[in-house]
Length: 596
Image 1 (tube, one colour):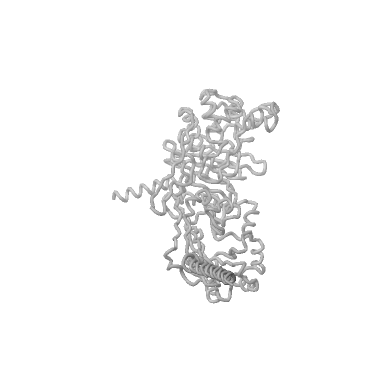
Image 2 (image 1 turned 90 degrees about the horizontal axis):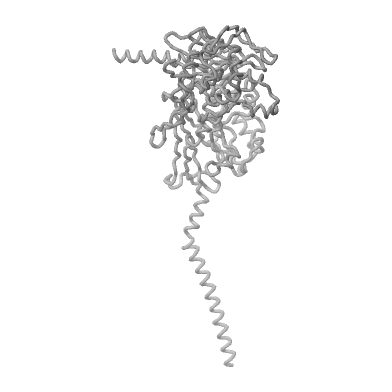
């Protein structure tokens, strides 16, 4: 009896212990949920009702060298659709309101390469009428919305499109490479300075926290906006471009294909960067329509192509000074070395023509009269390797180092090149004759020609050509000038004096560019007419002025028109006249006004 009682008592106690432990566990979990994890659950609850919105930062703006504002920003409305919430039954209505073709929305959805949970931009530069209509009917339009996007705004009548470049929405490939910096839908520089100086221009995105209800409708700002982070505008660029000069260059080139570069020889600052034909950057704000992009891409005139630093051309007779520098500096010739020009040169059974029968000419006269016969023979005298050596010394055959994404190195052939192309021992000296007058396999860019003109102007010294003088920091508004490497050749001043004298006589003697003469201004230059197997000849002219104190060096190339003296030289004259004559007249007027 006692044993049964004891067993029953033990069972009761065991049951009580289990009951106690059960309730203890329940109480612990309640305490844990209510007190310990309350903060975490509260935060999770708030997270479900708080939406983090990124705010695009305004890009830095562009000024010209005189602080004239060229490129700035403007706000623009963008219509967006969220595929997971949007009902396709609204397609025809939305397309009608946005003036889109029937079926456009579904076409955009099908071509989208981003996550289906991310909003899709349907149309940019949306008018206020759509925004007003949407605000009135937003409750009935699930998945439809809009946002404000900052776009580029171009304030002047110059194009400068190839230099400025354009922005575009980040591509999937770019996003994959820089996902720690950018997000889907971000605007980035695609070409030109917009691309090269992207890190300076992009600024820092802001963050806005908003309250939304269960249907993701905006209720208001979270914590009265106290947690928001304002976007920080990008840094501004002060360009080397001279607005007035760029305008003259673009107007002078209307109807022509080719390009102009003008450089300040002592600094390497690019005053003019103009490729023609050009295009209107305003077409690219908010994204260029596919049809317009197709038109520009398929245009036979190739307006999108940057002819200044990407295109390669034979330099023609403008290249003759390279050969002259090589012959003089290597003591292969002197100013007393002459040849007789009877109108051409017979070599290897071929007759290489000259422009005229110049008679007896030395190196200075050969530059002045652009005597092909002299340079045919000089090329054979100094040899391919010396020619290639001095070509590279003068900046050809390699990139210039410009602060710009497109910088073609061109081609300077040497014996290795000819051995590779024709086979060792299978090429002849006759191949070299054309190189003496800037023809044959030799190819350069207009930018390289402008740097070459700067080196000739400044006795073999300049700086890397560049398009940006300095940066204005957004936060401090401090101006920080940029530094670029010096370019210096090992060629003596004596050699440059001889060659520059020939260039002086091209304009001020009986040379090929007498039409460039401007009273009270000394200009040195060299014309070139480049044979073109695909059409009419290209016209080339390089120049610098004033002769004794060069302030500007210019290179002009006009495609498929004819003689350099007829087409390229007059354009260079306009540039030089605008920069030096009109500028000096204005300065004198200002000084006179102050004195009076």
